[in-house]
Image 1 (spheres, one colour):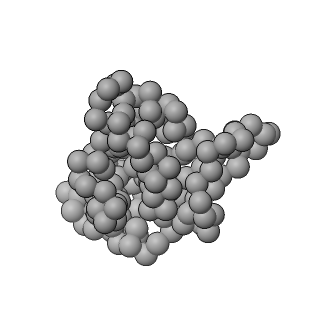
Image 2 (spheres, one colour; image 1 turned 90 degrees about the vertical axis):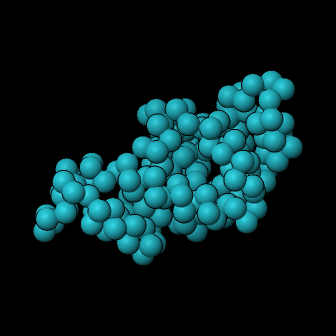
Length: 158
């Protein structure tokens, strides 16, 4: 449960509500892998909705959707340059990304949309705001790692 959450009580509540609304497993008395697999889509959808709400104090709904569209169907580990390349030249999304990239990187990190990973050593190094690692890193081998709870809703490729 914790590996697919932001380690907050609200995440557990979100998962329990998804389980309660699931007609296939609503009578189960325990969580099984099948339960988690069934709930993954709804939990992902509800998690993204909550992140959108947090970001609405900083961005318009249209701006948030532009960033999400740039990530949808992409890879779970990416860079800011790879995200930029997904926006067509001359598009509103490219213009927005170019103008606000530093803010977007930091704000989306702060709300838990993505963390950091460094895959250059023998072991991967991970950084997440919800685990106390403040400030997004973008250089020296650091990449953006979209939170795994969002993979289903964003159709992320592994």
